[in-house]
Length: 77
Image (cartoon, rainbow, N blue to C red; front, side):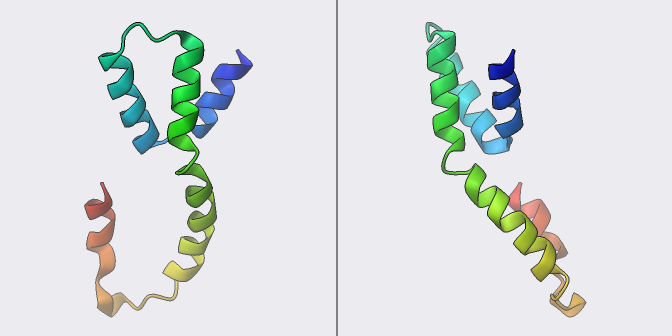
């Protein structure tokens, strides 16, 4: 159960999408192989996510409304 809790904590859009695609393409992967693959997909993404979330929250307040960056959020998805 604790393995699932750790994997769930690190789940985010990009790692989930990459992992599901790989798991569907390789249905014979064992559960430990799936866990290792998933952690490999989150390793480059999560540190940046955790670093830039507070930076974005702080810097985002200083962006003037005249720049009209409200289109940026839909573009990222």
